[in-house]
Every structure is written in C-alpha cells, then in structure tokens.
Image (cartoon, rainbow over all chains, first blue to last red; front, side, top):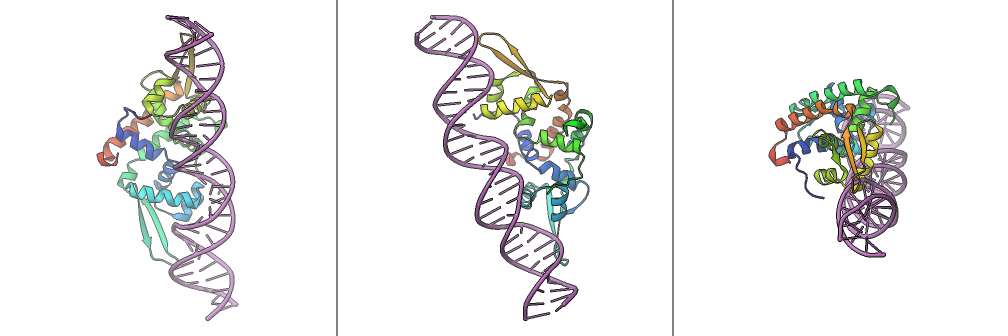
Length: 106
Length: 106
DNA sequence: ATACTTGGTTACATAAAGTAACTTATTGAT
DNA sequence: ATCAATAAGTTACTTTATGTAACCAAGTAT
C-alpha cells in the first residue's frame, strides 16, 4: 500500500486532528489558556501522553507554552492563531453531534 | 483519571472522527459508493484495519454495506444520511488545511 | 479439476497509549 | 535544618492498536 491521491494538505490536517486527544485539547484551550494539571483532569488524559501531545502541538504551531515564574512555577498553554482558526471545524463537529448522536450511544 | 465535563455527544463524535482512518474513509465515500479493494488502494489502509473500520462504521450507522451478486461478488460501501451529514465537518478541515498547512509540512 | 478474482481473516511483529511510581524545583511549616 | 506539599513532568512496565504478509472461501471460466 503506498498511493493515496488525496490532497497532502488535507491529509496532513486529518493526521493532526485525528490523533488521539488532539481535538479535545484544542477544544479545551478554545475556552482560554490552561495549565498542565487543569487540562489533565478536565480532559482525562494521562500525564505521559498529555506531555507528548503538547510538545507535538507546539511544534506544529497550534499552541504556545508560557512559563510564569510564580511559586511554584506555572506553565500556561494557549492556542496560537493557527490553533484558534480550528474553531469552525470543532463547531461543525459539535453541531453534527447534537443532531446525530443519540443519548444512548454516548 | 475519570471525569471530563465535556458534552458526551461531542466527546462521542470526536471519538468516532478521531479514530485512525475513519475521517479519510468518509472523505472517500463522499465521492460516491466504493468497493473494498478500491478503498484499500486509494486510502492506503491495510485490509485488516479496513475490515474492522467498515464494521464499526456500519454499526455506528455511518455507512451501509450492499452485496451485489455479480461474478465474483461485489460489495459496495456507501454513506448513510448520517454519514453524508459529516460533509460540512470535512469541508471545514479542508478549508483549514488550505489556509494553514504549508507545503513543506506535508 | 485448476486457476483467477473479490473480499475478507489469521498469526505474528511493531508502535502507540494507559498506569502508577518517581523526580526536580520551590516554598512554607515544624 | 528537616519535612511535607505542589506543579510539571518523566520513567519503567503493561495493554491495546496498527502494520505485514500469508492464507482461505465462493463463484466462475477454462
């Protein structure tokens, strides 16, 4: 298996968004900047994978990391412009879910 | 880790769409009904996982499977109304990818 | 009977994710 | 000074998901 014929930009976007947790993380950050621990408990992701994802998403330019030298240190994660621009995608998913996902399949 | 506070319908939608290959399969089927072998080569997925995904998506009501007793047998997969209704989601992903994914990150 | 085609399945190998304990740095209490 | 507490990770180990390639069943045409 090697050929795909699919637009490489689209394929790349899908590969980013369909990685486990990524879409949920963006969704959380759309409500404002968040800290590591707060994301972990609100999304229900393990520290290990959260750490991996945040690094990947930072490299992809979707989020930024800000060190605040409080006591103890606070790390604040927030969306970049590129990350914020994914809002319409998530809004469409939300709309679809309201219309097509029934209560008993959750 | 157990609590999420996220709307369960949205979370379910994300869990469907962020499963590997699922979004790409829907994207292919949006261009019309397709056969097993055709999907396999156009998307670049292994027969094993394709078979698994198609069963899951059928159970989720996103696609339907039609047996055509030709020679040899033809199995035609196509989107249901629920599946077709995901088009706006994929269109938004496509738009985002055109605007934000650069050539060199593909 | 034999070979060919479609739509799978199986057994085995590798990669990704989950779990829980541990680390580093800073600070406030004893 | 020592001990416990908190934030943000990391590490070692287990379980699950995916990839690979060989194999199988049904239906012909030869």
